[in-house]
Image (cartoon, one colour):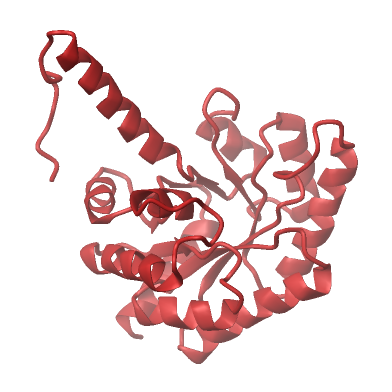
Length: 260
């Protein structure tokens, strides 16, 4: 088994392990190295929003794919852990984008459905998985549905949860190991999604001040917890606080560690 195939298998196994997989999303080599060296970290995932922001782009495939892939590849080359890439909606060709990511050492990825017609979304899932098979690896697809993320404030949440389950089941049937449903933080909604998709099949995004704890999410049957752009915001919040302290006559944070 090649090193790439072994990393892919490790990442896949982590999604079906009894313990929930927690991914602190990274955006450059420095953040990836720090997270990878932290005790208990078993895999990494990139954050498209954070990578785009690093280069001055808005999220939503506005960063050129070549630039996005280059950073993901640099991250994969810098660590010894499996790396999953946020491929957004696939940049118009999910299969080809996946093929290029695998060539750079990426063994898993997110793929947004943007609430497109279901047949198109299933075809995109199939194209990603086919690219993995062609490369000789079990590419770990975190198949994302956006029906809850982009819902109107007055939308029928129960109906949206059922739509997410329906779409998610289609992605699971197409071969995706997990279904990512950002925009869900309510415990009852999470429980309903787990009930509809099965334990160990749901992936969620942790949101500050809103999401249940990781321990609670594990108890609910969630397979994977991602953190999206929030780790970068944590870092930038600390930086802004540092600036404020210095400009008010203070000192650099005394607990600062040499991490890069």
